[in-house]
Image (cartoon, protein in one colour):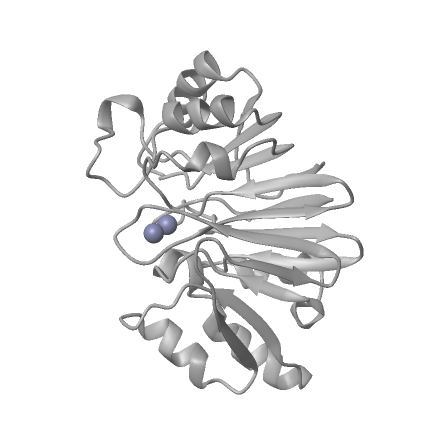
Length: 238
Ligand SMILES: [Zn+2]
Ligand SMILES: [Zn+2]
């Protein structure tokens, strides 16, 4: 299983950057997780976007879905229809546009649901965010990848991500800026989640350009030494 980091910022991109978007290649299948700004261009550098087998959406905030809009034109040109799996969200204008586009088939998914995308097993898990959101756990080739989407703390997270070979976790806040009422974990809490879930490796992502990456990495590694900071363009093999 391979994980391509296409966009790692949020809620807006750094200069030359892209917001949330991660490509998973497993068992000859291509699954895209989230589709933020700048992701379509970076995905196109890796594979033709119409070759995707499915798109998983953690939630419908713009920094996770806005490049679905130009993807409509690309799919129309290719004559291809793609399945999108994500949470129902009646308030999302982009979800409404996507639901009306003939090149997409939308499927509502909630925490606890299980999908099979060919031989890739996908489970949707809980998230705590201001809009309906989920995380994902993907299993294929005997490997397990977890992706939290956007979330703050929840007691059930560690169980859901138990035993992940690689956990890709929202760790936007430095410890001093985090609070229980905010929409994201801190890097420290992402590291605590990786430790509590027994994950082998952690990648802290959803990096806000306003916060110091070296501070986030230092804080996370104090809790969970096998932590890396997400860097767009990097590819990891599980
Ligand atoms: Zn976000
Ligand atoms: Zn969000």
